[in-house]
Length: 163
Length: 163
DNA sequence: TCTTGTAATGTTATAATATATCATTCATAT
DNA sequence: ATATGAATGATATATTATAACATTACAAGA
Image (cartoon, rainbow over all chains, first blue to last red; front, side, top):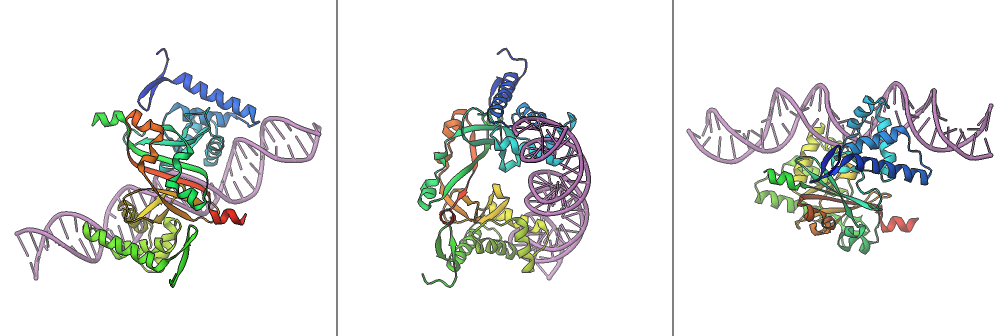
């Protein structure tokens, strides 16, 4: 590894600068393509989320926004977050009432998460929507799934080892 | 059908009195077996949840509790709910910050839900925990899943037909 | 029976999360 | 340049949830 900064994500180290920059570039390109406004505020919120690889509450994000002089009232954070979530740059973790940057920005996916209750790390996993066929109940009853939430709480490998 | 009252659950009619009574009896028996206190308050909250086959917020439940003269402050409702959730008599729907009675009280299960965004009906489906193997990510990384949240938002058959 | 420990409930206050509303600014396209 | 809609600023408030401490109920042992 030749990174300046490296953080553990899940259990692996990675070049965080590269990871952050790549995600920002991807978002930029996507917004360009679909004529969305990737404003300084929205960019900053995404950067904040990318900086940590864990879920941040809206008010924690708001505090960080304040520090950088970009907005200070709840709606500012919530609007930016809902933009990011709507376009797949971030996800909401319902169990935590918190938000994470998308870890799979290139791939069309329904997100799925593993949340370590010890270190609070949130790891995004790929999930096919078919993995959520609910034992056939959905198709059997004619329910039309539009969006799924899959969140697993547990203990990650490194936390398990410590104990 | 020979029921006095019948409500639609998902898309099917069912004998609601029987269903309610059966669930209460099951909870009673379970509490008996494990020396848990199925107090009037807890019973009432479970009855409230069983009465509706949809998710109720804690404050909606609290209003109904108040009407029946059993407690009137938030902690009262939240405590009863956390007891019911802890022992599997009810579940929390994270996406809605709301609670539903368990529809599969006899079966050990990780709950999964289909939530109609039009009629707000919540249908519980059986889900094997293996359906949440997250494309192998969990096992690959050594993450130990303890609890899963599976919630699908969409449109139920009857609401889809109306449109 | 007493008393003592524990669980449940009552009560007050407040924390944490989220949105409605209206004013203002900014970007863009004609 | 100017009209239009999108984004942000700002104030207020709604909604969801818990902390902390007091009181009551109840079962088990002295």
